[in-house]
Amino acid sequence: STLLCGSLMVPLIAASIPGQRQRKITSFRVPPKPTTAANVKRARDWKGRGFFAHPIPRHSPDMVGLCRELHIEQRVDHFDPSNSGTLMQRYFIYDGHYEGDGPMFFYLGNEADVTLYINATGLMWENAPNFGALVVFAEHRYYGESQPFPEDPTSNLRYLSSEQVLMDYVVLVHRLKHEYKFSDSNAVIGFGGSYGGMLASWARFKYPNIWDGAIAGSAPIFSFEGQRDVNPDFYVEGVTYDVTPAAGASDHCETNLRKAFAGKALTTVGTDSIRSAFRLCDDDSTEDDDLGWAATNWISEALSYMAMGNFPYP
Image 1 (cartoon, one colour):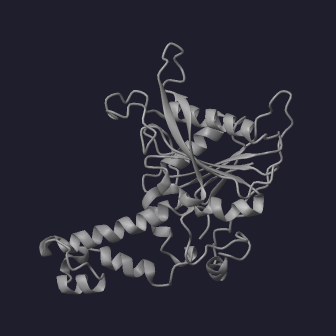
Image 2 (cartoon, helix red, strand yellow):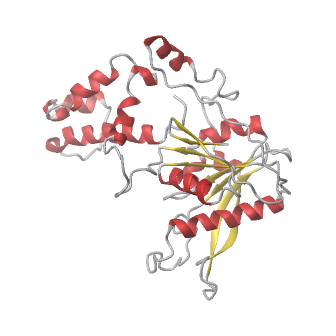
Image 3 (cartoon, one colour):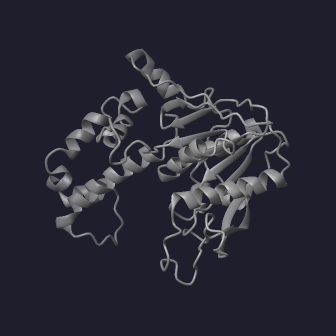
């Protein structure tokens, strides 16, 4: 099985479990990162030509409406038997493609209401029909409706930790495997982006008997203080790569953006031109003196979020 971190593929060896045969996992095909001019066009034309049998529809439906909204009772502290506190964790499930022998595609929710990710994680939806997968989106404790202390959510944050969250997901996977009568050949694949990708990676590392693989998009698992050989510019390099021809952008995109961000960026552009070019709303209240920087930051954030949300395909 394989852990995918952004466009980097890191092979992982599944742990051998006594009394349980090793599972054979069907790997995802990921387009190679082009290194020559001849490959640039191939990267641009890749989408919809082999990686996805089900391309993204022009108008995607409301995926939340397709799912069942369910809850599971979780321990507030999985590691202290004397603590009897519980919380109701919310999760969403879609079994319309599940055929009894397919895998589980499990999204490890991160720092927001989980419905945000149900409509924004196309990689799971696009591949579920091909694999006959059970699709699951689990909500992160302390976010959305999964509140340990709903009357005062921030009163006690000691149980807001990745260790507790990962154990929530382990418990939920166990329950779903029992409910859907999973066998040893039914793989469980974790999905996540950014912090959620970190959770997916850690889940695969820490609980290889639960997760057979993980796809982690934009997961900075190697950027903690004290780690060696950390490139402090890896984030901006990744964002920049997405606007280059090698990533499928136009030939002049990177050059134009660098010019736009150089010096004082858009602060030297007339406010009327900015409002017209970006079609700002008539009721926009941004002061003219602040509009240049506001527009610059908006563009920068848009590029960053597009890069962070881009799972391993162009």
